[in-house]
Image 1 (cartoon, helix red, strand yellow):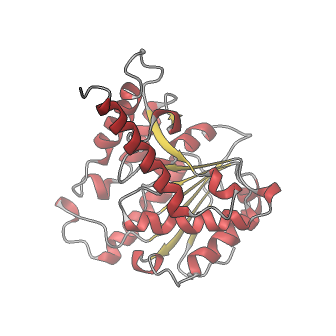
Image 2 (image 1 turned 180 degrees about the vertical axis):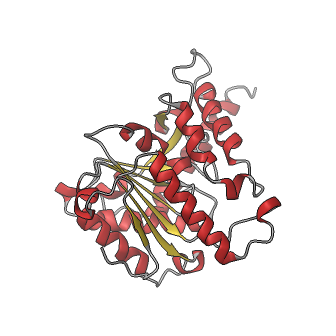
Image 3 (image 1 turned 90 degrees about the horizontal axis):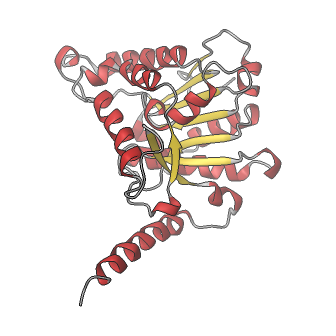
Length: 283
């Protein structure tokens, strides 16, 4: 498969042919950085793990060169970090038994150039070969600019796919800004109760981040367990670990829907929910 960026990397963990790796993919994660998939696409990874009927395919868009670094990684150059992070992502795809792992290797600055169509064209290429039923990507209320720059072309690319080939489910999952502020009947609760050991193992592969100064391993499990417990104040826990997601499928079903207004509506409903609860107790 040919990508716009000549340094893009396609890795197929089990050595299958490229055509098979893409055609068998039922669940797909599209993340900005190495380790984003192992934070926000865990539901898809766990759903497909050791399955012969379901396969998870991963796409990481940027090259990781600008990562924070400390301790043993303090003196690593951007190019060294780029190489380390790409290697970590390949290792995660082996442990998680992904169908394929594509790293498009763009600098974040390029992805954030609205006029640059290279990443969008790569998505078209991938979706011409893979027809996932479920897609996981960043949520539109994420506070990381690169994450938002990644998800909008995903929505646009999915809108251009023929209706009969579009995924059945499209989720924007929490990374940099959680989604516990969504009102409860709009939260998509992604149950991660199966194989908590695999959740820990996958995120722990990214040593350049964890030893390098960001304890994503502890923070991720804390968030997932917190989501499960704080989801409902009046019932016992239904699961031990969960991600929250925003349902992005309406944006695919109706290509005329304004993306910014779609998110505004969630925020306004949250505002109304908070205000009405306060007003209930004001004399």
